[in-house]
Image (cartoon, rainbow, N blue to C red; front, side, top):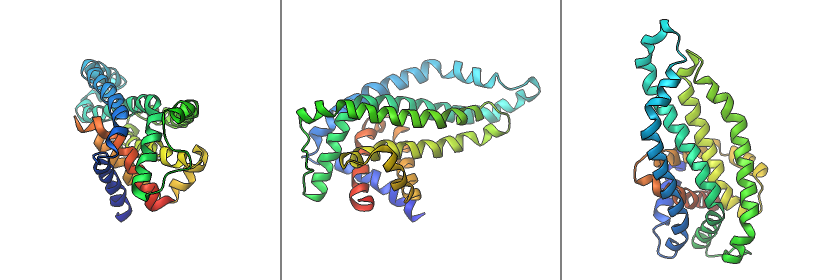
Length: 241
């Protein structure tokens, strides 16, 4: 439990760090991307929520229709989590190069030491392709594991556990997503990052759950991405480095 709470604490520290005067300018672009895409998320959720839930509940056989009142809130939470994480992937794909620079600035602030390659616009342009390739790797990792989990939502009985499994999986993926920026700045590839994070599994889970919680809070979710990048950088500096 201490490890999980410590993971929560790093997300709260991320919220504090993005308000530091010297770091605010690095937050602007990730904040803009997040605001635009989460506005789109809310519009999509409001306009298509009932139709999607009706479609999912349509998988129930007639003799189990009475279960819809029990399953409706489970489906509602599940659909919300899936939508949130889908838009998060899109936001990170667009903002990946800017997130790398933010992570570098936060690490310099925490340690007082600049990385060998200082973040600037030339480095940003140079890092666009590697950043996109890293995001595609994470997307492939996500897809291979998400599809079997999504199938659980349409299997009667088992679908009761599906939201819990999806929440844990989402927390793990969010940790992988945001830890990639500080770890990637030190040359650690995606395949090398996973075992490093698995060594502190509960800490990683706590961090991911806290990020997921931020993304589900209206208005606060606009700052979730830069706060998660800053928090992941603090986690790297103090726990993983």
